[in-house]
Image (cartoon, rainbow, N blue to C red):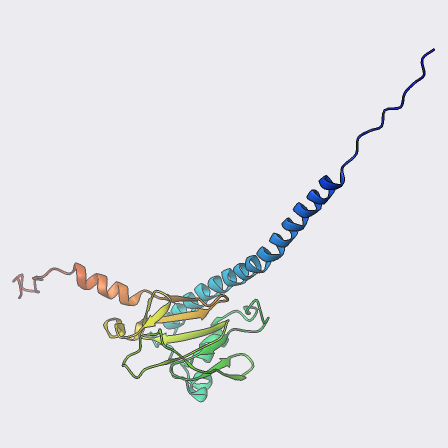
Length: 220
């Protein structure tokens, strides 16, 4: 007579359980480390997109206002009240729902050589400290105030040189050239211009050395 034998099913060993928990914990730590960087990248992507729109809107401003450029004067009265003040432009041409993704407030405007940022919608001012030594100004004494994340700096008669302004070259394009840059999380900035200086330089580089004048005579 044969008796049935019960075969015990083999379960996980203590070592295997510990190993699985360790791997799961490692994956969670990696996610927690990567998540803030991912969120920061998404916020910076929105800031880049918003700055591109603001630059495009300023070109519309110039077309609609007889080629009058927005002034970069940092005086609050001129920024808000002057016909071509930056905040006058901002309130009319920038969508009201465009806000910094970190603060949920409208972007703050920072203008030439003033340690202040303006909320063009509410009229509030925010003190800023120090100077950004990377910007190339009109003269050795020209300085840009150091801004904070989400601040937008504007410079008329200027172009971008990488992440910073270079307005020493601005005279070649006259009053139609401008540049803006926004401070991003992580310590970098994005600078965009309307390309007028490059267009002027491109024209100068492609112009014939001896142009023919109205009388068909080659000039010197």
